[in-house]
Length: 361
Image 1 (spheres, one colour):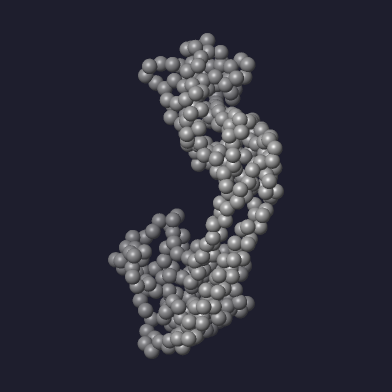
Image 2 (tube, one colour; image 1 turned 120 degrees about the horizontal axis):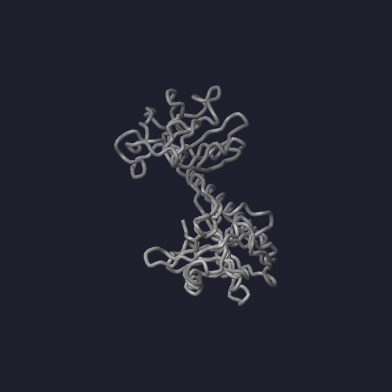
């Protein structure tokens, strides 16, 4: 816990522990309860303010965090009033990741405040400390965060900018000059969100969708030129894809009942063929000594989604896979054969890490 390194004096000005006299004559009070403080400036322990006779309340434990946040707000406001708060470019990666598709595009644009910022130095930690109108048409909300705190969800039409800094060591919090130098060196001004007011993200998404369709079309044309998916003579089901010898942490690798025997931490692709038929394509887990992440031979499965339907075991041709009734999946005879068959017949597709999110597709 950070010790109280600064406190307001009788005039309300922020005084640092190294800028006041030692003991009760420091003239400062607790920013939470208002009680008088003493300045402890011993040789053994870190210098800090403390309540007289240790009469602090439980809520006073947040006093140091309040003072650090206040210092950061004053630092950013001073920079802004001095013209040194130029906003960085906003960057966003637009990506499409599906079966056979992994394309992305980085979008960037500039945004600056029109006029001065309206400051609210006493705002709560989850509230913006300053607001302004940006030349991109969005409203700017500027936050101040110590460490890795979480921002609230952005409001509609609002951009979020955060000034963030890790917790300073106690040695730099004895006086304002050292603290200001630390914030100038380690504080970072970064975008957390900007709405697509200029339409650049939507344009990039449209370009990537066009590229994805072209990639699929080219791939299907190559499959047609090669005579289509090969017929498998030996239709014996392949073995399960092997995985790690120890079970993964369930908090890091959730299991989904709609995808029996799936490998941990993999992506799933849903192919919707009709209102009553859908298939989930995914990598099978390996059961054995080899690590599924580095194994050279991988096997895939198709599971009826969201669960078995009448006739699922006979719904796909042998060129796609062989039904394993014990596991409840169709073991794919070849990944590309399965994707070729399903892509040509699917009304819609969806990919992601959580197959439960596909239920509305």
